Image (cartoon, rainbow, N blue to C red; front, top):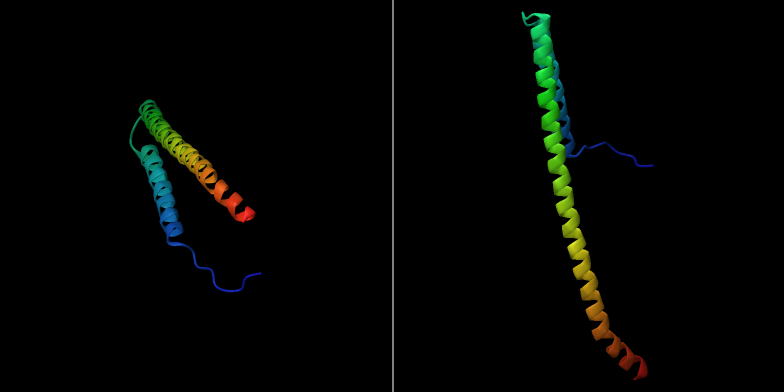
Length: 104
């Protein structure tokens, strides 16, 4: 069990602040729409438009994230293949030396 004071990382504070900012913006936007002097038909249309725009934005972000993950996956695979090739090459060069040392 650890004893001492808790010290959060700097990234945690920034992430929390951004999360609360986005929540506040969302609540403010919904409140403004509800309290605005519009008819129910106009309000529903505006809410649907906002929902559709938010959904499209999130879909775009998720596609971008998927593309970045694919790129990273390809880079990791390339590095792993090069490392395996290098290891095989080094094994081929080291094996004769190992044999000579064990014989000697």
